[in-house]
Image (tube, rainbow, N blue to C red):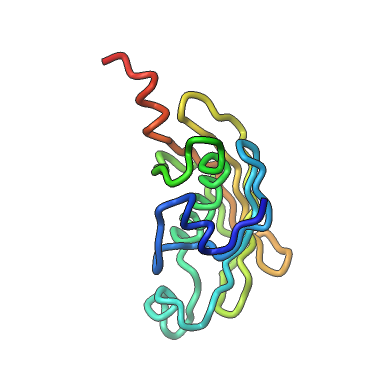
Length: 150
């Protein structure tokens, strides 16, 4: 399955200017999601981080990885439009700057999904070169509530 910006917005709730993905080239629900963000010179974060040496902030790179990872779960039946939260990030690695006028390619893989908790590996690339990576742990509150004792 592929998703354009409008379809992405059907599955998850982030909106401009905080939508950090433009296109999903592949989703295998429950398994992986891959896609990209085309970084324009006039992105809001380039204007402030830093005007004389613009680059995509590391935490926004992680946000892009998180949004793409979430689509692996949000495309499963019954999850469309639900909220997912990042609960932790491990093994963060930033190897190179992510610059304007580049395509930030994102590849994610679900490691484990159980009872509304998901662990994913996510990697960002520019010009086929690994620029960042992380292990992300996400939560789908709607699913977690099914297993609540109280």
